[in-house]
Image (tube, rainbow, N blue to C red):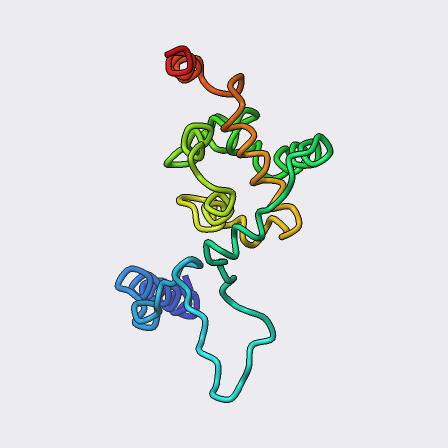
Length: 181
């Protein structure tokens, strides 16, 4: 073997040794680099004097405002439109009957509640606010459901909670027992 080949071989071994040394002992710049996940990212603050074009945080109406926004007559046409909006925005998580057994909702932790039982005693405004501020994944409705569809959803959720055939059988029996007294 020639002297030049030995030198090239030795240089390759030294080079590979340096590469492995840097790889396994850590690169100081990588150790100092912050590991920021997308959900942990913070938006930088706006410089003084700038005005936002639109609200960054959606505004939640007060209870009185929500009562006014949720007002909708229970007519057959409105119920039909409400059923369509419910099928488009809600059925995948809350299920066809509102019992929380929708195909997407079963994957959530916690599972969507059976709002047929939960919202029976709520006013339309309380339901409206609960849709926008609810637990789990519901607050996304403030960004996704257009404002014109929200009263229809309130109407349909109230309709489901007040319709005896939509309630579980044990609740139907307890209601029937209290009505016969």
